[in-house]
Amino acid sequence: SLKWNVSEKGTWKIALFDGLPTGFSDNPHNLKWDFNKEEGMLAVSEYQITSLIKNRIKGSYRTGIYYHSQLIETDAENNKTILHMNNYGLYFIADQKIYQKPDSTGGLGIFAQIAISPKAINTHDRYIGFGLSYQGLFNKRNEDKLGLAYTYAGFNDSSKKDEAILEFCYMAQITENIFIQPDLQYVFNPAGTGQKLDDAVVGFIRLGLNF
Image (cartoon, rainbow, N blue to C red; front, side, top):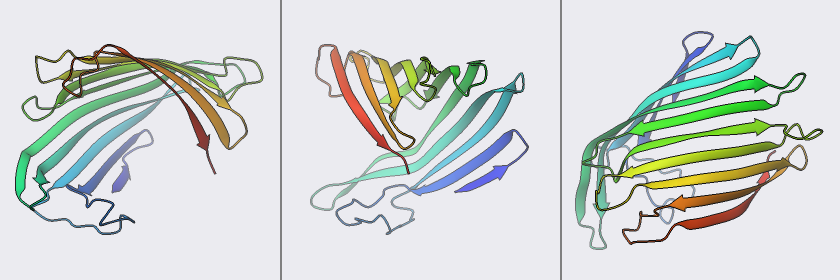
């Protein structure tokens, strides 16, 4: 991977990956890297612009492209089948704080994500996500974060209804290094399995340890 600070507010990144990483059963420590034509290569390039509104409110805007040369599937008898060649996609991500709390790092922020890829190759050929986040909603809880988001993923198969998720979460900072984050999601048209499923409610609690 390479990173180039083009200017004070502009950064360009590029990374190259093995197109078909070895499974953890044969590569438990992920130290066996093999770049070859048969397994292909994954390349990602991104340009980011960092902005400041009123010299205090930060934001970032990223646009990028990925390219996967080919993907091969190997069966139990070691027969190999090329699933696709020359896959690619484009994406755009915006993350902007729109309100800064006085004398605090908290405030209200918005984000948006858009991605597209060839319909003939990818199960999901389009994606949109956006949401709001607020840090420091309650007094003396300046590190806590409240989030509300909506995501949409379109299927290339017209027989499936596009899937969407409405998500609500709250991250409570317990100590400087520990946080707890309850998360609740409502899934519209869960269609990834190819079966007709009812809308689903998903809830979980994430425990974070940062050192």
